[in-house]
Length: 467
Image (cartoon, rainbow, N blue to C red; front, side):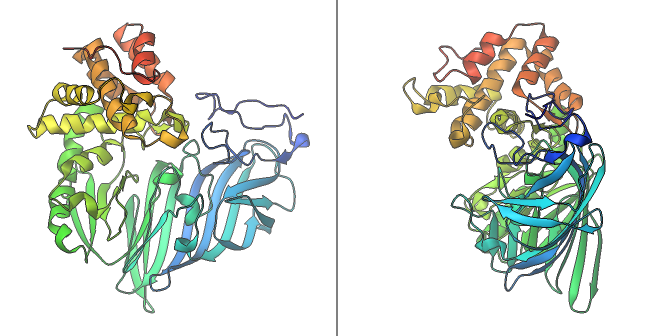
């Protein structure tokens, strides 16, 4: 049996990665990072610092090709390691030398370098690949959505391995350069800041950079024909929004909502602290799906959110995630309440700003709307299970629990907590247990019973606290 120790990244959450005591004990990296909900997600044995994606995309055929260059550090001696990926690979090079590779399982690409890699050594992995991502289905779905004029990569808890090889778990965050060549007339939108766009030989090349650490599922790519707008927040952060040109009747409502991004960022900064990234915005592609996703700096919105009129509530939700989920990412998927509960609570705060209800009123409405025998209360927001990870209760009961916490510890400590959590874990990861400890430290209260009742008991709390 190989000796197992905990990497510094995993200390905060108690997940274990296989790390032999020395290079002499080199072996394969684990095919999963150890997430209790998704044991095969992510990989052991290395830590990624940067992804450099150099891609070509043809909207007419949905063919994606190119090379992903991954810079990482070995956290153990490695004879082989896994990447999460689903497209066809033609070549892999590790530190400039040709490596063997093979597919294993649903999305595992097993790479065997020509010589073992010592613990602590830097690794550069270049994977050349191609495929039609919309035809790839895993677990019965695809995370690559076709549009009439292109395609979009956006989903949760996974979407990366439909379009680039990765260590696909929020624990392993990295910076990104994404360069995409598309036919002249098409545009490519991704995370961060657009560094350049150049047209030559009938192709336009777009180079986007995300300089801050980013979880893999938050990396997004959209190719199509867009109307793009530019503005700035009050603090000077560039805002870049994009709308498919063929949104039809939804276009005006989408613009009326997403164009308030800068205003909403300024508003949320008052509660959560300074905006953590170098740019912000959102995009509304012509897709048929019905969800929104907090892609880092550039949230994705389905046009269905705007079918009945403007909807700034969903914009407030996804922008709140820039602090709760993107800046501070969950450490394991069971911690989803830290993402969705607080994004839901941001909707309450924004509603108060828009004079459509106070957080107390809105939380009370949710509490009263579900009788004690409603299955709504059987889902535990603090550990909902993989099958209920995106259940309404995680969002709604989760937001109600936050208002209950506010009433329990008082406004002074509560609002200090909303800023302290992103500041303490900036660009890293966190757990609910860590959040509870911080809330107890700031308030001086023992909150064990509170968290047990509101997050971990599959029953309706007997009382909703009044202010």
